[in-house]
Length: 506
Image (cartoon, rainbow, N blue to C red; front, side, top):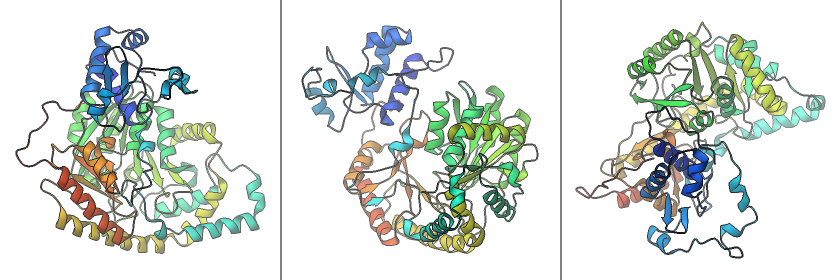
C-alpha cells in the first residue's frame, strides 16, 4: 500500500495516513476482513514513529472502519455488527478457511498507487435492489438504442472496409464536423480541428489530468462534486482544494482568496446542472471564473454532461464559448443522453493544449472505436434535435413526480431544490442522521442511492444523498421514493436525541 506523506503539510502525519487508508477501505480497494500491516511494519515503510501509526489506526477504529485486537492485529470491518467483531477470531491459520490461507493472499504485498476509487464502488448494486436511484442515467427505454444499432448494422454491412482500418487518434472527421454544427447552434464556435473524440467524459477528464496535473499541483473543485473526477485527480497526487457553492454555483469570491495563497494549476467545474447538486452557475460567475483563470494562467476543465437536458429555458452559454485565449478545456459527453454503451464524448481545446491531449489519447488507446463514432454521427446529424426535445419533456415529468412524492412524504429536516435540468436531486437531511445506517437499511428495503460522502474530498460524513429521478419509470420512481422516505423517517433521530461526541474523521 503506497501512502504519500506530505511532511510540510499543515495536516498531521497520522491524519494523512488515516485518510488514505479510509479512502481505500471505502473504495473497496481493501476488502472487509483484510489484515492491515502491523504498526511496526507501517512505521518502517513510512519512516514515521510508532506513535504516529498507532494514532492513525486509533482514528480508523474510532470511526468504525477497522477493529484492532491485542496480539491479533487490525482488520477491516465487514458486514457484521460491531459487537460481533469483538468476539471473532482473526488469528491467521495456515490451513484454515480465512483469508490468510487463500492462494492470492500474497497480493497484499504488491504496492499500488490507487489512493481512492469510489466511482466503481457505487456503480453497481446488489440484485435485491428494486429501486436503483444511485446511478445517474436515463431509463433505457427512453434512449434511441434501436436506431443506433440499426445505424451500426448498416455501416458494417455497407462499409465493411471502414472496420478494417484504424481511425484517427483525434476522432472521426465526419463526427467532429457534425459536432461543430451541433455546438454552433448552441453558441459555441469550434472547428473540427479543435476537437478530440474521447471514450466518454471520464476518459476526457483522465487525459487532462494525466497530461497537466502532477503530484502537488493545486486543483480546485466544487464541494460537493462528481465522484469520478475526485478519483482521477486524487490518483495524480494533486493538492485538491474544494470551494463551497451557493445558488449561483461555485463561490468565486472564496476561490479568489484561496488562489492568492494556493495558485491553481487547474479548476474543475460542472457549471450546468451540476452533478450532484443540480445547481447551474450564473453567467456572471462563469465570466468571473474565466477572468480568474486568465489572471493565473491556469486551465479550466468544464465538464458538460447535461446542458441539452433543460426543462424550461436553455442554460447560460458555456464558459468555453467566452474563451478567446485557450484557458478552457470543454468536455461534452453524449453517453448519458444517447447511449452509455457507446462511450462517446467530445473535448474542445486550443493550441498546444489540444496537441498534448491528442498525444495522450494516442498512448491511451490508439483512438476511440470507429464503429460507435460512425453509428452516433448519423443519429446526431439527422435525429438528435427532435429526440432530445421529446426527452426533455419526459424527464421533466419524472421530476414533477419526484417533487410530488417528496412534498408529501419528506421528513423533518429534509431539504432539496428542484434543478432546472439534468438527472439528479440532491437531498439534505437532518445533520445528526447516521448515513451508514440509512444506506444499509435503504438497501435492505430495496432502494439504492449515492451517499453524499462519495462526492466530497476528504470530508466528514455529510447528511446528504443523491438520487437520480430519470433512471426508472414514473410508477417505480413514486414507489421507491415513498420507501426511501419511510426509511429516512425510521433512521432520523428524534428531536432532542443525543448527538455523538466525536465527529467522523473521514
